[in-house]
Length: 376
Image 1 (spheres, rainbow, N blue to C red):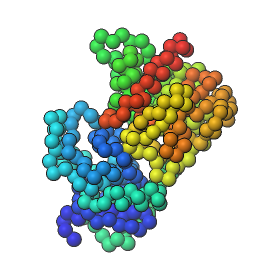
Image 2: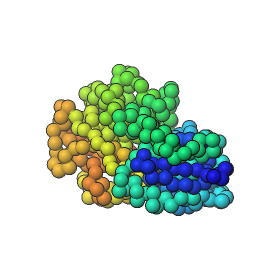
Image 3: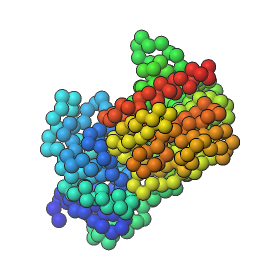
Image 4: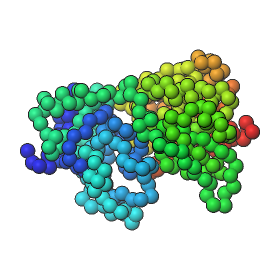
């Protein structure tokens, strides 16, 4: 084999041979696909992709390079990266370095030169699964590589939010000249940098706290509202966050959750969660807001969903009053949002802070502001 050879091995035994891209070595994780035509820098730095190998369905990746303005967190979080045709050179006025250079610097093992559309069709029909990318000194007979893949941890049952959360709290202030109107405590379960920025633009001082912060510590800050962010892992394995949120809801503090935060709200209300066959990942998912009938094109990154009744209002199994499903995915009827009718709490499954991506859902931050205004 060439020194540039890389092999992708799927849990079901299928293999793809391509070229090493980024760092060389071995990486294991759940393999998923992203349908976005752009926005790869946000994808790479989104903590929700922790321990996942990401396949880009768009064939040409890296043409705008990597800049200093768009990272959503302090590092790249994907476990591995698979593209068809990497750009030979970046061309953008904000580019500071090439994608390949950054992947290599941060130790992200990748692979290029395979038919990513074919791979996506496999994942759509068989479902996401464990996989591994192997290159350089990690190469070995396929049977041995397959054994490594099948011995890796599965995503189901994995509680990962605390692995990506910040170690200490920090504050995001409103822009200069914008008065502070609210104080929000945002629990970092894998938060993206744009989220507190968009809240701050609306006059909210945002205190971002680690995932291990207790309900008592949150409430001691006397917030006008509490926010739970996106994040990685199986919400069914995160009992600690569920119990924290139940105490916040019982205290009557207005709540807003995004993505993983939506799933934790669902569990806190007493509903279950389940794993999707291949999940929603990309910037082109149609979602209807049932309160307005408006269809939004939204950005997604989730492999789990809330199991709640789609029609009418249901009683919260955990005793928090009536709840209705506020948003639904028009592709597959997956729950995309929850609204509590008797307590001040709501959530959505998608990402209203997407960058690059659609901005159709930015109004949700205004809805959170209105919820706090009504409570105060």
